[in-house]
Length: 117
Length: 117
DNA sequence: CAGCATCCAAAAGGATACTG
DNA sequence: CAGTATCCTTTTGGATGCTG
Image 1: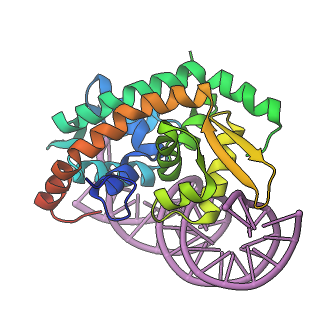
Image 2: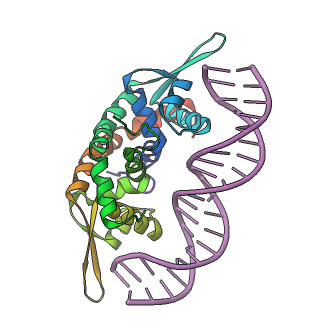
Image 3: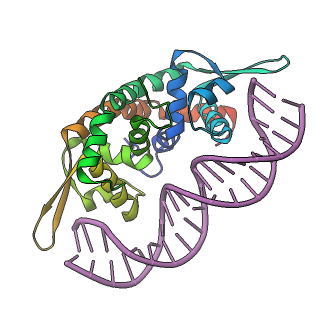
């Protein structure tokens, strides 16, 4: 069976979409329920509007996130995980939590070898 | 506690190193044991020497991968996961396996909405 | 074999201004 | 509010040639 190690495997494309700094943060931010555009922008420090909207479009296109518009003035748009999105976010959880718990150790390891990257 | 959602959190840096297409593939490739440079290059289709060596340097710098040189002619260099690397790779496993198992579904979802990204 | 250095093309990403 | 459009800078990434 072809897997993500192969150039043209679908898994490789999905990996490219998900294994990016912003996608991981957006998906994880939506773990606890739907959020609106400006809530995401506020919650994810340092993300630009451009990157947020671009990332959201990709995730919606992949079927990970659902976009809901409430017609009103001002308009309200909220983003929520689909079942598929909930699935991948769940498997992202282990990674995210592991990093949170070990980030300091890794920083220490970096220091020990001298700042290289 | 600060987490990866914050601009200056260590976790954000680690996330940036790990949540990249090549880092995920390199770490996963090393799951089953040490590999040499050319073995990695062969196994991970489409990776250039530059990207491979750059990714390896980052992972070594983070303490995820150990680099072992056997002085000989020609020289033999092998890369192996450290305990830390084994830890993060293990939590990457869920993500990797999930993608492999659902890639087709996602592609289908993409088709349904029309090729956007 | 295992890589680093260099050059160059392409893509990602940020800031800002503007629209419905 | 929720974006899009534009411009510009930075980073990424590939190809090639060379070293130990």
